Length: 175
Image (cartoon, rainbow, N blue to C red; front, side):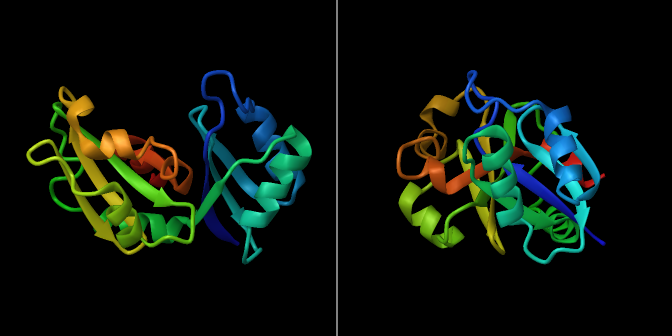
């Protein structure tokens, strides 16, 4: 069996798309996934499966059992660990004034397409770097409202193409 991580976008935010993590775990197990664990209340699920394409199974499971649709990003644990091991030096440096994120693309867009849509990062306030199919992104905690990427990644037409996780979340999931 291969280990995977599923990132569910837009659950348990401001009382919308509520899913309890114990229920989600139980539904994953009932659907044939094993070694299921969840992390935080924001839709991070680690699981094992023999299935090659787990995304449609998970999307159907959520629609059938919880009554709504959410975008799902699935990545093998090996691929996620490879991405983290290739992070740029500035990402997750431990600097308290920085906020580090990893952007996963839900749409058929490439990271280059997303960069073109969002535009250049704000000089001296944020940094981005593409690696394979993800974007490493760091911004200044105190000046986040001045950051181009902070505003644009949450805007209509772009936000629904992405799911974003903090460096701490991704690193804890990979342990």
